[in-house]
Amino acid sequence: MAILSPSILAADYVNLERDIRKTGEAGARWLHVDIMDGHFVPNLSFGYSMVKAIRPITDMVLDVHLMIDCPIRYVEEFCKAGADYLTVHVEADTPENIHAALDKIAAMGVRPGVVVKPRTPAEAVLPFLDKCDLVLVMTVEPGFGGQKFMADMMPKLRTLREMIDERRPGCHLEVDGGVDTVTGEICKENGADVLVAGSAFYKAADKPAFVRQIEG
Ligand code: DX5
Ligand code: ZN
Image 1 (cartoon, rainbow, N blue to C red):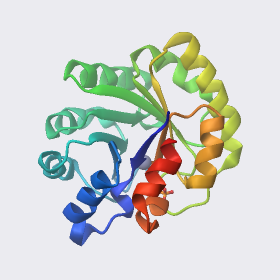
Image 2: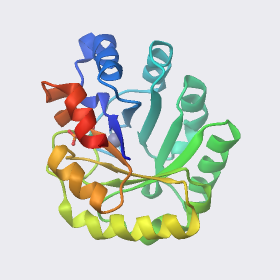
Image 3: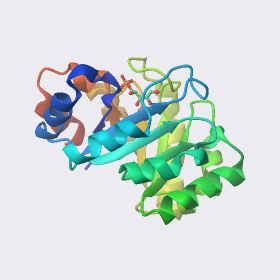
Image 4: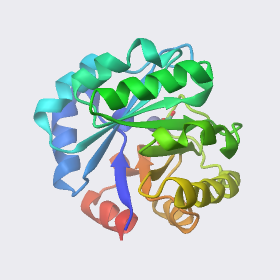
């Protein structure tokens, strides 16, 4: 069974508490929080204060996606703020610093993970896989919601599913970008077990049905 992780990037920021409550009431168990620094990606979103503000109003698993350069600088703050899963991009720093970031996350009792951009191959995950509880495959170029799903990421997804089953069973395999009920099916067929959806979820008139369709 798959897990839906709705991305609040597509929520109504003025009514964020209302939207987060609706998300939980719709049956979602995870909540995806996109952190962008205007440098690693050409867009700005929120910082760790947002995670800290959300933490007391929900029991949903906070799945925090760091789209920031040199993430090691901030992982401690995001862990303290209440992230449950914290993912860093393999492209965002040297391998040594990515290892150090993952170690720091785990030492703080938070589940670490890595993310790969569309042009980064599956093999780039391998050096970090033993430390990961979550691997995230971008199915759009990171930075903006509402983009078109890249179906050509499916071979990479299948490769990562095989790597995880062989070397790190129990690690989640997540997809992010352009996911709706149709593309979500394709992702599940290709091995994803956690699906992020921003625009499609927050636009859906019947959110409980959306959760059931993705998770069923
Ligand atoms: C994009 C973000 C995504 C975004 C997905 O860089 O990482 O999490 O919110 O939005 P949709 O589902 O609209 O493509
Ligand atoms: Zn994301």
